[in-house]
Image 1 (tube, rainbow, N blue to C red):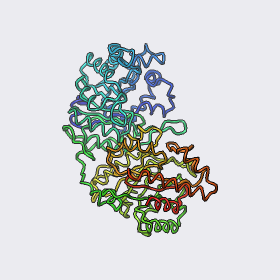
Image 2 (spheres, one colour):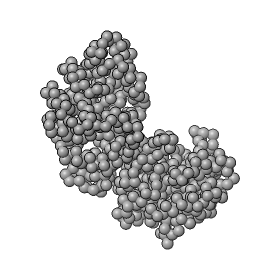
Image 3 (cartoon, rainbow, N blue to C red):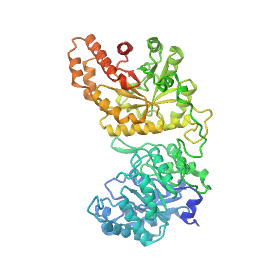
Image 4 (cartoon, rainbow, N blue to C red):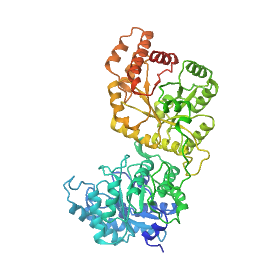
Length: 612
């Protein structure tokens, strides 16, 4: 016999189930079908999903009724089937749950805008929700989960509808964007207390974002309400691969965040789009240690989850020579040096030595440039530091390894003396030589920045103590001329919040756009290293201007490259343009990094000599 839901959630962290829609989709149900109608037409298929979650350890099953309101069912010609579909959904879930799990009536938005944003009145919306809630009650639910709402007025109407019918527990969840506010722009500091005021027993967030972005919103909710919290993130960001929508966050990664959610006051944790029974199984294992932990008050916001064995990070100026220079405000010069093709490192080491002699502060070693088969960036960086005696910036991409593999790499790199990192998401492999290669993308660069920052605080991704902690100098990439500056700035802000200590830009050509970018990010107080790119040829300039998204090459520079009479003259003109750009930005940045398509070290030296 199960205890009352609210008593149990005060005693331990409960695990909700995962996605229903994406699981049905994976079983061959097309997205143009009404998934809720399967409760009556194919109940065994729905029961199969429920049973998989029960076996995985779910404490709460959500009935397959998310869109079973009159408005949404009406788009399938099923408006008069509201009662039958909802009752059947509860009964199918109850059959699977038996006495092992609670059954929640899932209620989602109507799919239309209500006043003042749309023509549907609040009273009409409440009536639609009341009709669905009454059917769910008739079916015999233990609680209600109102989820994926973007509009406080609409979820308020849903809460009011349930409240007028019964006193069962209500879990009220808003859906958010990566900056933490709802899709309508309402911040957690507003919607959290308001949901409690409206009558919700548990408040939280679900859908739209992965666990990393959701954790920040949970922290903000914990700071403004003492109510139990819930969190049900997507299994990462959806990616469209070969005509299918795929969610790529691993079960282990989701589980690592479930533990962090629990430390911030979350008492109901599960998953939304893309989560599977295996995700729920790993989440159950992760929160199992908290099964008999009484609910505490709101947690303090900190770089790592409360209760984890964190230590103070190593002071920035002690992390590396590059970190010391940037901390003191010294202007630095970096050069990008590709790892060699094959295993022969001699020529690359000699180029690194030449750069050291010319006063270059560090060599940036790209991770799989252009997705070609080269020596690993980590191996090349270690060889360069050991044999050339110059510091490196290890360019580390999320593409090729899962989260555990990346953590292992980073611990090994630290043991071998690497201290400077440039964390990037990485180009898709199919842009390179091997069209059949696949990418992993367990996390993106924001998530990886969080991982490294945790290592610097002495905590691994599983929340275990790491002694001694790492002392990485964390760099990130940023594109000042991205197609969407708003999106790029927002992501950059997330990276800084996650622990970024410096940034290297993509190649700069448009000085006006770069100046506008610097004004937008000046409040972040993060050293900016400007990327410089000496064109190799007219073709190289035209390619960057026309075929590389987010790169803006002024027409003046293209005319100059077209006017060069020979290959040598074109290369010299490319160096001259890079020098001019460098001179123009030198007073507003804290360093430059020179890169080019062919890795010509001589061209990089020419650019830097001109700046000096």
